[in-house]
Length: 489
Image (cartoon, rainbow, N blue to C red; front, side):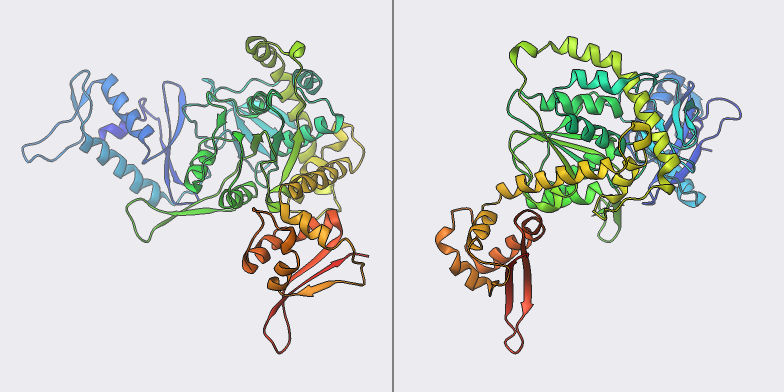
């Protein structure tokens, strides 16, 4: 056995656990100095760990006369191993992990088990919160967890009315908005997607960033709670893989490509990319992340992203109501054990009732909605209140999104004088000519672009304006594609 690898099992009888995940990526779990670590074998973290262990235990690379690296056996204090020795150890671990044929799903902060899930406390105890239908308790982990350098320890849960104290600290005053925050928090405790995207809107001074940070602090505390959102799908995947809850701060606009990527991430659809330095191998990433987005204006224009979101507009905080960051986070630190404890209590109820709970909705986020609905008894809400809250919020969000798309106002105005028995029908070119006098600079100027933009508004215009739109209908004999717009009776 390679001597560097032996450093991962310092005591007689210690074992290391080698396995691969769903992507075929190799991982190793080991225990050194009473601390359990699970690391990707090819990661710089594992390489640095091997170097550190070698350095502190005084092993040195012993090279034979042929120049080939043998196992590290010579004791020479305070020397780093050679790059070749580290590469050899990593290669051996990779081969052993792949050929072990053991598949596991290493998780960041929260991972699914047979009866429920476990939450990594992220502290030196190496323990987790085990959550089942019967309750929650702090135990040794039964599944592997990955820890990142920025991860902070989660608090030990406590019994108490944490939500009331939590909302006393936040700027949210509307009772329904408070319940929607609980909906998002509870849905974020699901061990698998889909997850609602929480969109926090408000003017400057409405504590959007502070509220985002506080919500993440309850579920997944971090040294860097807020991130910026780039237009790179690869950057998004990196952000999602490194943390459980992701907060994108101070957004002004979301591109169409990034909107599509966020939609896929919210429901756990995969992202694929080429392996580094290869032409044919492919790596697939499956995100498992609740997300928070915040911005001053309505940053979501795409209706498909709105349909996956909970949208809350935060009020501006009056100067006399402001407190210092030290006081704010001091109070948050005091109450977060009770917030987590109450959240876990309702989650246990959800696990217990999920199989006997029904909802009438068939929305894209029905699974997340069902999860929260199953906890209504514990929350002391009316039966079906979750669905009503989400439906009302969705309708308001869709209206908000239509306001960000000038084409919707033009179409509504164009159909104002028509009745349900007087539909408009024609090609996209004809529609462009018919509404041309009302077009503004940001309205599409070509028939193809008009048809594409209109297609994104079909659901919203039906729900909010009562307009039924049918696209790309082929006219018999001509091959032309027609559009039909009519009012719903």
